Image (tube, rainbow, N blue to C red):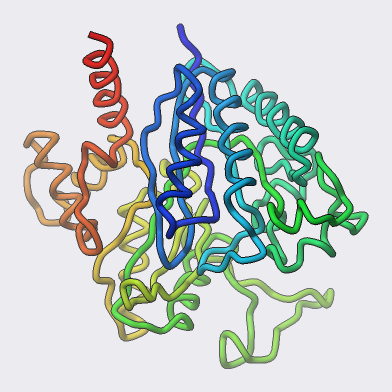
Length: 362
């Protein structure tokens, strides 16, 4: 059986389509790669690319994409709403078929070493590929963002796993990259009926697994509460395996709770959506819809559709297409842009790509 890896690099450019095209062309120059999705955001100034193939083809395509991004993106000029510290900000590998996580880790580290040695880019290995416990967290690796990168890589604690640890003009342009191995992740943004980043962040802190630091009075400016050992007391969030932050998207004139669902078996998209709806209600606002970044598995959409049908006391004995439409409508996935299942559900995209390639071959 063929081994299949997925790669979902995030590039710090979401506005210049010509630049993005140069990067995706470099990725597609590797024969055997299937480019599944390119999702760009203007306000975040970020593009999420999804492609699959054999492990060897995937790491070659990832290397070419990272190399091209280093040539065409100048981090000294880059700004956007999304956290970032490099032209290729993050590059995770995800095992899809007939490949273990242990093998995926080996490929991630092999890619990281090549990027560091051949391109002179500082690389941090994260998630399952991390060499150190603290570096498993992408948030830890990226803390300080691009502006704090010089101080970070030159410190003993945050010396890069691969690549140079002394600041130079090349790093000033490319920034650093996090390369890792992880399970499938859903990037899911929930739209709020407010422009307040403060409220969006408050909700994000209430739902994300790590929660927030407990304070007296105001949850952001109040005095920190400490335990008997002198450590800040944390209030855990309500959603397991969930990371979240709040931001304002000028492009749409709304605030969002931006979420990474790390394990949709534990926290599915519909449960995350419902929890944010309830938190929004408690803060006197509403959820108006949502936005999916990248792709989503078919089963996740079917589970969501069936959940909302159950909630409405309606039968689930309908076609898959109808169940998916219920999920789209209930989650408000059409609010900011049309949601096309053939372009957003991973199984459909793979089948469509395979059909197009066969037709081209004929």
